[in-house]
Image (cartoon, rainbow, N blue to C red; front, side):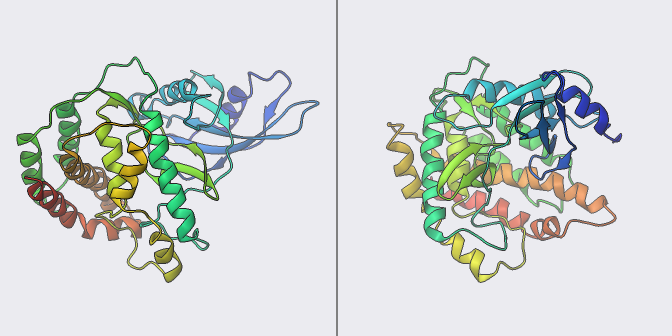
Length: 330
């Protein structure tokens, strides 16, 4: 991949503010398809303002999950709704495309997967998860005019990814695909999908949800996909760490049950959503697909990421758990 020209990015990102300029780029974690940087906007007569930039990776076509301006579009649509997102401040369609957004305070933490030096208290985790479920219900009422993606197309998307990896990475994934394809649920009214809706893709200050972030794979589709993805993370089938210390395990103990999160969700968005076990099994399949591609790339690296080495060991279990969830729902 070509090197990103930081000077060019800073010059283009600062254009909307005459006399203003951005001071440096500091790479941030988060997102896998675009580059995220922290910077500071300095303007004459104004206090310095921290900002965040999203930049498409140089040398690659800015399409699909690399289309950062598409991410900016959905964030503009969600501005001033009940779904908190960073505010889009500026866009530039040059090469590579980029946009500038407000810096939102907060921390991201996945309670049953992440390891941090100072994890939140269990009660804080419980409140965050309930806030996420309620916000999801509200998000799914925001009208979006884009054409919905059929459920079979969603399933086949992950099948194509799995077809690119060695058979030993996610053994017997074809069996789970066939079982899911044979029992495809009837569609329900489509809505906005985040695509990776979980606590790690949100920012919180204490218990308060300050922003839903990382909109790289948003779409319009079945509401049960995002809901099942959030529910799956109450008992995720995969791991990234050989060992999580007592403090992080204790934090994870605050994660509510699936039933509690469903009650929070349905307290706002009433009505029944049938076939949720199918969607939970589908989320296991999606997990196996996305992690398999990362594992494939990790095998080629001279310095493999140890977290992906750990994840690779459990992908067979991810597939088998998905099959078990589906079998138990018959």
